[in-house]
Length: 114
Length: 114
Image (tube, rainbow over all chains, first blue to last red):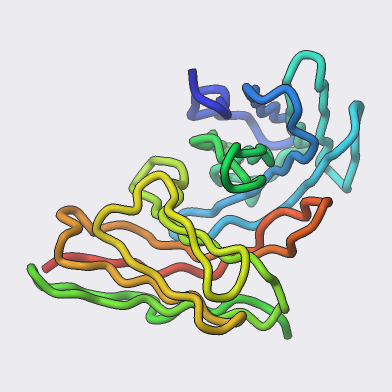
């Protein structure tokens, strides 16, 4: 089982729709969760962080966290073609010998069609 | 402007040659990381350093070496022992402490073997 698993893509939605990106993680004690957006050929850019159960909204983006289910998601409302990118889920995980560090999922590629 | 600078943007390596990728940050971050990304795949951790003069192997350290002589700098050397070095290399940094803020990434170096 992968430590951080994202729903397999690619995901395609029409412009104006809600895009839903999902992520599950294996470490029950993880406390910090992040979503990164990566445009083709570019480096990842942090777009959302979430630390507590529930929803966190920032503009058209909403991150949702459920620690009991070990599940974190990202909703993009009113999707725009400029949202077309790969979205990476990252979870801060404690390692036995080396402290905590981020573990990344493989990413979900999103395409928003005009 | 604070940030992470990676250079060069593109690098070509001949068979049997060692090459060094530069990563410099002026964010005053203690921790720095090197990732490799292959087409259509997620990020794989090569090496990381949480303090000056100390670093640890990540998941795919074979064929790579690093140094951390200054807080601001974390260069990565791709040695001739790395048999398949063609990839996109990303450097990242973060503050250390009880709270995780997520990583800031540089713009990346694209390495190609010729």
